[in-house]
Length: 248
Image 1 (cartoon, rainbow, N blue to C red):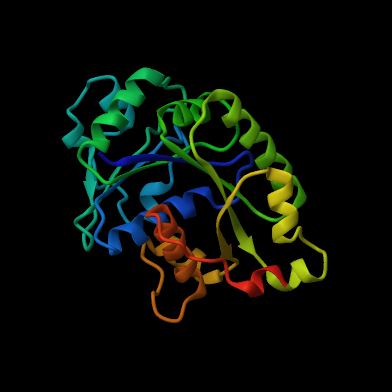
Image 2: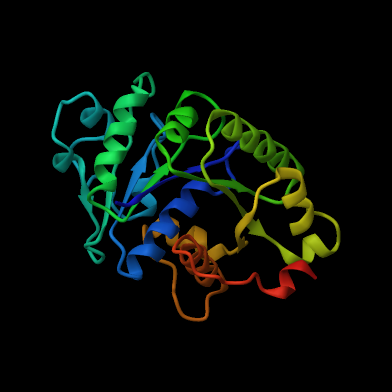
């Protein structure tokens, strides 16, 4: 049976969808079967980052409301056939039955090694549905104070809802700004959020370029691609230490 992982954040704009897409790429490149679900109703974007825009005629709400079989809503990546996606609905007024969502995720976990849910930002109904369906959560934060505060609150809400493994990814890290005190450093973010660290992702303009193209990050000599690969490897249970220079 596969693992259902919800990727969440308290604040928008921290790169949650970017992490979901690149984690899906990293796992698929290692040969894992992956399906990503866009849970952000009305504001879906995961299909763009995965290069799967308009690839499926149906969406997540169609599946949950039994308007189509699951297979009809699944988009398959052109160059990574083991990477699939179910797009979110464009109808922001749609309501998700949390038990139907969990049943779908459990069914998908019987067919894929990883089910990744890109949850909407904030701690509303969409976030709670994603956490309710998950077996593991990743909280995404940037090192700025507002994001760190919201990430800490998000982590507390998850803990109050359930007892599933929950870890932190710090995104858009700028080492020099951390050293000068313009951003929280790694230890300060961890102390504030009170979650174990799953990985750090450096700020990188190439991420924006790849996202707009719907493509995979260049894999050679890219610290950012290596960061996503390391996060995927840690999810697989590999013991990959955090590079010492991040804490300097």
